[in-house]
Amino acid sequence: MESILHGRDIVVVGQQPWDTEIGSNCKNIALEFARHNRVLYVNSPLDRNTVLKHRREARIQQRLRVIRGEERALEVVDENLWVLTPDSMVESINWLPPSPVYTVFNKLNNRRFAASIQSGIQALGFQDFVLFNDNDIFRSFYLKELLKPAVSVYYSRDYMLAVDYWRKHGRHLEPQLIAKSDVCVANSSYLASYCQRYNPNSYYVGQGCDVAPTPLASPEAAPADLAGIRGPIIGYVGALVSLRLDIKLLQAIAEQRPNWSLVLVGPEDEEFRASALHKLPNVHFLGPKKPEELPAYIRQFAVCLNPQLVNDMTIGNYPRKIDEYLALGKPVVATRTQAMDIFAEHTYLAESAADYVRLIEQALWEDSAELQHSRAAFAATHTWENSVRQIYEAIRTVAPTPTPGPDVALAHA
Image (cartoon, rainbow, N blue to C red; front, side, top):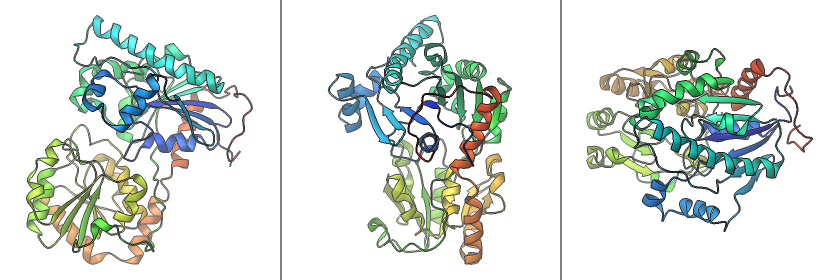
């Protein structure tokens, strides 16, 4: 079946750079866009504070080389897909209070960012393009006016205002950005309802999963850093962020069941690094891994966890890692939230530490090949193709007869 958008030019902006170390909705969506359209994926611009704090990091050095003109800003990463690294730096202005001064500097940052994007648009000959904004509230606030896309799309995948940094200016700017976008799409019903407060053209588009949906045992060996860790392994993969995950809950599980090994795979924030979890002999921190490495870890888990805190940040967010777990047939114990309702028949939902311990035990003894195949079949319905098709449908509501771009060689056309 032919894609609804076909032969179009799409510019993608957002918070996550192409070389992010964690899974990224935005990257998955861009790859799906590029199956039938030309796509320019724009890395977020460097700001001065980031340069001061992380100048020695390789990714910062690469971006500085682009700014100095020592390296090309535009890179081909796949058929019909280019990544643009902005050749300008923006000012770090979040410390300013909401005021006319902040507005002036934010407009300046947007102009610099837009100028870099415009150079990529011109180099590729993009016309009548769709601007897809992945939750970038500040740096992309004026891009609709500056770049003049045929259609502007705002993608809500996180409730950003739950974080102090984003709330300070975002509580004023995000509603305005949602309202002036041509269409808004969200990966959870909770966030779609939030967007509908400000823009009636707001739609729930679901979520995809980028793990092959098969519960069959992998022929590959277990990762080396799992060697010597005794089972059963109760595991989590993803960023270890204290605003999202319940450290005390994890500690309670590990302390109440010392015969279980609690394995945590992902980068840690300061609270996790300082937590008592590091003192427990049955808790193992394995650090960040490349996205393509994660399935090998998940396959070794007897039970997978999503130990979320319930707060403004998490209550409405689609937990993509649940699909990644289920796609490999794994039993999952997760905190009950509104977004978890769609998984209720295929996961174990907990509301307390006691629930977690009890349900992990239940998951361990009742797991079976039949349940594994059922979980994988359910996860297989959550594809990026299906999610992006719904994004296309949403765009079609505001642009039913788009003008096609120039003839280009398209993959899978």
